[in-house]
View (cartoon, rainbow, N blue to C red):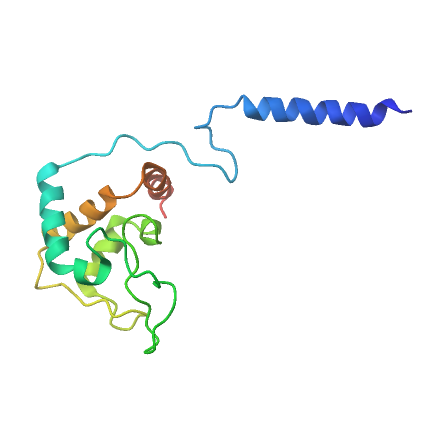
Length: 153
């Protein structure tokens, strides 16, 4: 009968309306993750992190942690330029512990020229640097990072 195509169209319209009525924060496959709790802000730690970043990291990663514009392309020596740490690169895919580990030990055998800061910066100073550049991450990036941490990634 001819009613079958109309029934399909009506069902499809109902599904679209139902999905549109969903709360934006609800996690749907391929959609943003739920918002993370409010960020804990230690203004003294962030000030220290910014000061240390400017003194030790900005010459490679940029004053606002924007990284090299060509950070995804290997240079002539086969290394990747410094990536952005401001949430526009891949740093948010890593835990704070992994980010601190990279600062601590650099990437001596990796695809970059990241130097080791162990012995030059204390653990608290490295943590402050990570906290500072994480503070630059847009809220949706921080939310996705937080969700990954909750799942143990």
